[in-house]
Image (tube, rainbow, N blue to C red; front, side, top):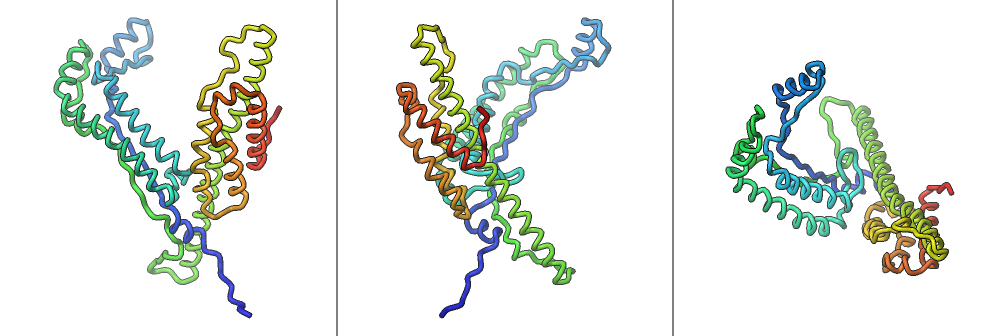
Length: 307
């Protein structure tokens, strides 16, 4: 009889094969500056102690919408990464199975960001001249053309999850090196537990919202049947269901260790597939059944709801 046993892979070894550590970094030109003179004048006008108030001025006055548009796209880039990843300290853990889909969506966002940056750089002379006029007598200088041309960035970076067994240290004896390897492995295991907790919390939030809104809508319908004016009370948006189905689409990818409990939750999320918000509005039975399924998943997550 074959007595050979297969040892379980270390967490760091497993994650190094199945996921990467990902980061989206965005920078934006600082446009607000304190006008000391205007601040002092405002303090005097209000009979306040000098230094009590601060008068901040936008260096690119008149171009707020252009800057807001770029920053909005930067936020979209961060949102794309969030959707396909879980928390990994101050970075994100990106399962390899999500990389292609992430890159497809990231490419669209990055292309739009680059387009807006090229456009604002080309318009820099005009925007600066407009800002000079719009700033009036404020003692603040507009940004330079170079500042506008280099004022925004949006970058995506990846790095491999470190395998603790690969750690080597010169000048240390074998016992100390092993101690450090064990410590690194424990850190990886802790980070993965946090990543799982993040995934569960992200799933719990829309489930809790759905349960609450289904109850509120039932109350709305009961009051309408009694002839009571309800206005917008109890109404819910289509996102009540899409917020769940969006995370359901990637939830299974976060189960890198094939945890059977997480697999059961993934299977249970399939019950929300194909449900439309209008279906929920038109059927109390469906609202009640959907809320019940959400409560069952929350119970599986270990979250008890207070009535």
